[in-house]
Image 1 (cartoon, rainbow, N blue to C red):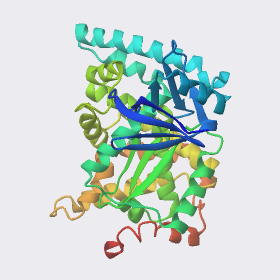
Image 2: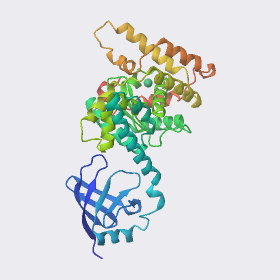
Image 3: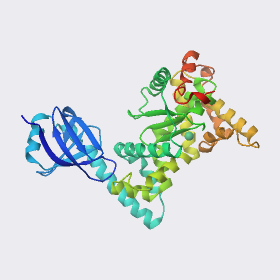
Image 4: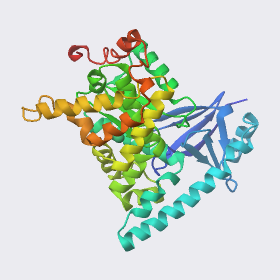
Length: 373
Ligand SMILES: [Zn+2]
């Protein structure tokens, strides 16, 4: 049997732009066009409910899709992919949530336009569907990496293994998104950024500034607190107001300048005092559950604040220390609260053996050996 072939249209799931492609059915479904060459496993392909002869195919868990109207090709796909219409693939609930969300977002754009108050938009943050949040996170991630000057990702294999194990232990049974994605990037800033869709970017100088694994883990735990509370999405909606919602309604998350604005907002985002407090509380609980020192967050914040005050008058050579504080304003009240919440028994515990921490600290060795302290 000759390989079936048809022409169709490919959508990358990020923009509304259609890409003309050639579809070829072999042992996979090959999609080839200008700048596009992907192949989908036949077992993963699902079909959307469309009026014939239009056929819309995608891959479970991804937002890219293809559309075509060639009925011979459609039959060939149907023969080779008997699971095309399996019920769980349709995810009717998800689609309804998406429709409801679009309606709600549309309404809120109207309200913002009429009353100029993004309060409703902020309240809507927890209702943003995971799929949209994850697309948003991917787009903002790229933008931030851009703004930071494309810092290399650090993934020295033994260090990455220690980090993966540490994170797995910390998040176990805590209901964090399953696609939680933590990346370390080599950068002179001591900071950690949490983006929508469970993405956390750690800048390597934060690891260098931590005096032990618990201080580093405590900052991670604090960021995970922001993930759970969906603070990044809320803050981005707040920072960009109705234009963010409008871009959701229009379904185009990358084709506009909005993403640039989102990236900048995420880099400089400060959360409300309440949000910081909640993330601190979360960090204390998480550190204790993971067998670490629940006081470590307070210790690190205090040290950063002290160094910052000491060096504040100088030429700014220690400027990097202030970055974490800028997005996480330190108050004595915050440290006091952490100490009051932490159970005394956890003081001085180590979340990782010293050898593992030494390995983890070398995570950026390969990315840029010259400046590693
Ligand atoms: Zn924070």
